Image (cartoon, rainbow, N blue to C red):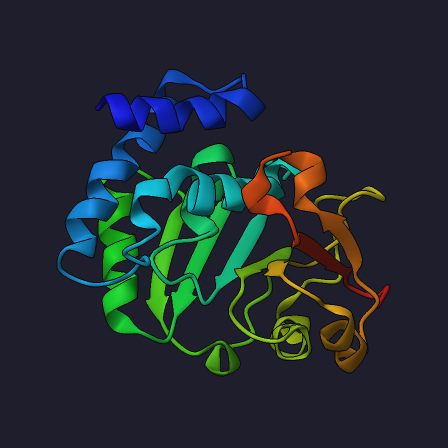
Length: 220
């Protein structure tokens, strides 16, 4: 518990307005992911002890950069064990999240964890991104799942033209977490994303060369 508390201090460092329920949900993630990781390898074994920095805080860099309006509908493509969708759903309880992944056992883990912490604003589905029916979303999020070109091709048909987050900071679009040298990937995508360095948001060594890429719909 002490180890979990020290990790949670990292969340408090950057998010000081967390409700008791959100704190309880975040705190529960440690034991739940360790339990599931002993059965199904959803998180790298070397990363499980750094869950809050490498997975939770990384996911919440999106929350630090953008504010989602209530009732915003968000699709998380390739969620794996629930990232970035579950931390974002905790942080934005009035938004609606649809977490999808092609691997059934990973979706099972994410769904079980969300149920265990009482998340009411998520639904889960085993499906490949390119097979998703043309339901419309306000935003698509993803974390290191596929090249930007593919992510945008999957996302574009699923985005609404009308905007609930009707401001210059967050038009409907794709928000993805990426790392490394992205020049070639961005060039190949044909997109002109807004690129944000996460280390400017969370000045921790781990976030060096990690980025948020945001492609607004209609402004690519």
